[in-house]
Length: 310
Ligand code: RIB
Image (cartoon, rainbow, N blue to C red; front, side, top):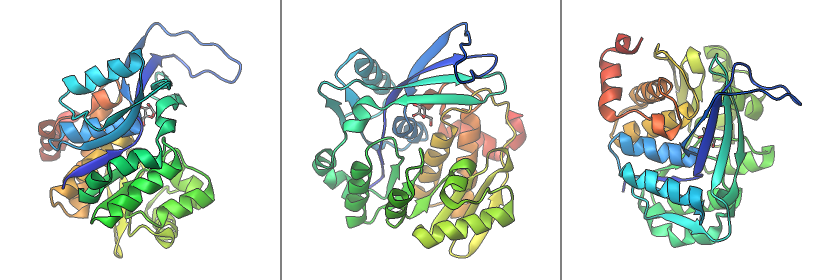
């Protein structure tokens, strides 16, 4: 029962720069901040802050950063009993630059995340079979993601896939065939379908292409244009919340966490997408990735009074 998250864990090192570097260029930053990151870890932290304790399956290294991450997640009250220590591997890291407009560049060093195997998932299969929703992203080996999906689908779980980073076409087709809900952002949608979702009409065409590949529900995160959803012939565009954004890293992960928590709580799709939009929007008002996830009370307050954050 509940929500499972299978995916990456990183320590993020984020530097604020005036302008993002061009190839071959060096830029200076005053300081960096480090904190928990990785799309899987961000989703797990956000689910937990929203009041649902997830089964979080991820791999970290047997190193200083791994111990730092473990301590941070435990302090946060996240159940770390399903974290796997990868002998001889480095904990994943992400090197992030964020400019004054909030644009970012991210280099991920996968490390321990890339050592996740079918065997690791085999050990956790009972948890995957028992969950209601499985949250996935693509910063771990595809064989492991595919295996997690198969175990979850042997139970009754709905699989929510964040197709980030977008893999090659054949891999994506295989994964989408087993996915219930896919949640690309605009650029991922463009890479997967060849269609840039700039409005309802283009988003609908792109969503139909994605439906043909498998998922019954398609949600396209369109940034300031809102979030488009399409399911069972029902479509809609949920407007984005107007907030004072300072850091958008991890906002998509918080969106997916909000979506899973709302659906798990029995909300219908339109309400769940609105809840997800609020969760993602609030995360952009703070620095950091998983660390920036809002609490349930904060999300409910924004839903109740959307003007409160602007
Ligand atoms: O989605 C944001 C995340 O992507 C960051 O936390 C970074 O670790 C990369 O995985």
